[in-house]
Length: 202
Image 1 (spheres, helix red, strand yellow):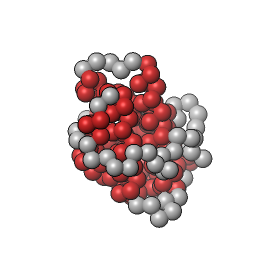
Image 2 (cartoon, helix red, strand yellow):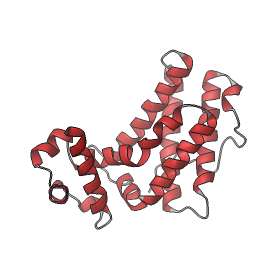
Image 3 (cartoon, one colour):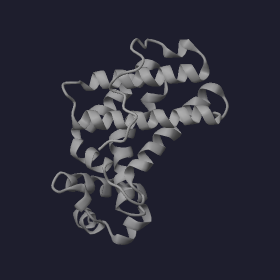
């Protein structure tokens, strides 16, 4: 039941986000659109920002996350799938990204990326990363999210395929450097990119 309610609330939010600015959507709007009770909403989410974050991570980004955790080619294709979903929900993604304040979605989205990449590093090395690799992973996570959002806002003719390749190259080069194993780069040809943005998006 809880999972069904979350999905219905998330679907309602996405529908509303096509009709009005995301920052103007409140809990009452989502309840009216979804016919879900207020009690069920707060049993599922802390607030509207929590629902926005859930929707971004689970309905747009994370349906392809399993693909991002294996080989270079699988990571690339998973990233491409994610980027194309973001294109389809461009308005929602950009508006979610610039929301600020307590429980701002972007903070949780970046943290989610850090945790996922850290777990992959643990899976590869068999141990928890030290502070320096963790710091590098944090920079990568911020850069990855900012790169995708800058591209969505102003692609300037750059394709989703190109962005996915650049992010994948940067990720595998990063892991190769941390683990000190060039073989992990696999097919990477263009490590580093003018597209990779490690500065705040505005």
